[in-house]
Length: 335
Image 1 (spheres, one colour):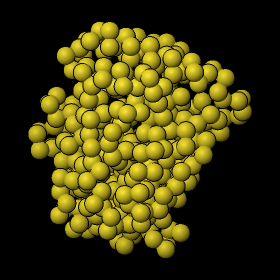
Image 2 (cartoon, helix red, strand yellow):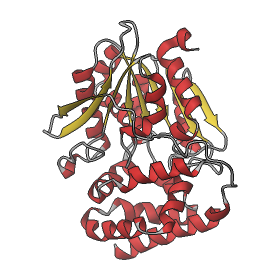
Image 3 (tube, one colour):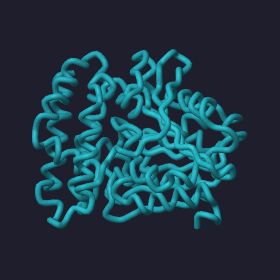
Image 4 (cartoon, one colour):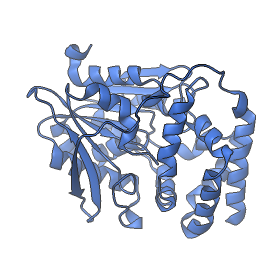
């Protein structure tokens, strides 16, 4: 296994070198250098999930009784602040509900065996039960999109009764190991196999990741994995701060489930509600092929692929993503 982890690290470095990260972004002014990222706050709440894990929730109320409710689920190694621009734009227009996924942000880690995509779907049911009334619009980025699909797979009757629309942002219904981290095809399989077996080697994997955090390579790797070629450095710095705040145990615990999950059958539950599917053409974490598959399986959803944009599309192309969510939730009023 140690050799597998070394191969994983070598593959990551090889992928970075191949993309020539250091020269990938042309210099230009940074429009977000003074943006107060993470400063948009809602009403704080705590929620106890079915296994006793305490989840941190924030709610943005809305005075309009006819306003839609939008539930925003964040991705792997992030937290609810990753929806910074969307909550900033939509607060006061809609009722917003956000939470830190278990082991992320302020939420508790919970039992190791529940660090799964399936459990995240159960957590979402508790969030919906605890903080929403009437129909809801579920929007998930990356692992958050998997959370939405997991909820539909586990609770199809609840989904039919309560969900008015879904937004799948830079996500995948499964088979991620085939294109692991955007690595060259000749190392992707070995790297994903090594990562899928890290549970018995958490100390070694955690040590590798902790050492990576302390290098300049971490900044470049994050940029390559998260953004298109022209993204401002401030967006990358904000993303890196969220990533560096993640406990190593959570990173390691969730990775096997993220690589192994298969939720394609769950999409059958979702084809009767309005949908919005979006990804960046330069996404290497959940590559565009996965979004095209989602579009094929949900043909009535609005599907958008944005050029020169990476995995953190809700930051990099925040206006487009916010407008898509607004159209989904408000219908003709948001067009």
